[in-house]
Image (cartoon, rainbow, N blue to C red):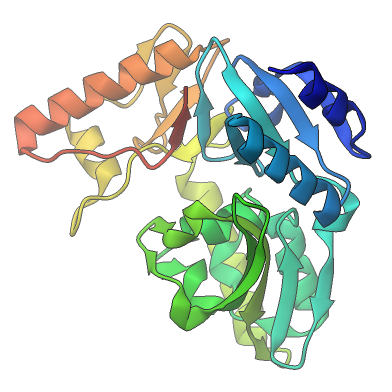
Length: 298
């Protein structure tokens, strides 16, 4: 990389770290270093960074809460952008709902919604991601998806251009969307207004169900595989006898078979070896190909 680019990075108002261990920034607590780890100060900072990366052909990726990512052990080259600055954690309120910036964590989004008397997003209870990551991957649970709540999304493309996309211009799908070609900056969510005891009960039920069925005793990235159409990935894995199966520090949860947990200093290699073993067994026994829900950064 040219000296001029390195000097330009030093002029950023946000934070820039070299060789930052990504294990510190993922819920799996696994992963090697990022060559450059940048927390931009605001949109101007972000735009300058994106333009420089595009001009110099430097790989650039966006990191949210790190709750759906497995980073390889040797780390990743290029720039990892973490939208964790104060600018990217803003929330504003409209008559029709709430606009939240990409760095807002979902638990805070739910808390602020309840405080302002907005309901409809209770199914997100217990999901540890950020608004930006959740919208991009169309996060959800219990048959509901965050894309169903989206009114519009403001994004930046990888040339630094900003635009606002209405719901009709966005294609959401199961655990994905066409927003992956952009950087999500903020989203406006259409929510119901008015305090409702029924919604309060629903929120508590969602929390209770998540606590009862999902393993939070060890670091993990949540569900490892997508559910095949009409089937449960967790049930297929459990029927193949994988609960409690481990490869070194990585173990299939005894509570939820679609969780692989970092039981003791697991590496990405341990996790991926266990994933391949699960995929091969499920394919052989049931003829079903399990596809990863998590993103694997190499």
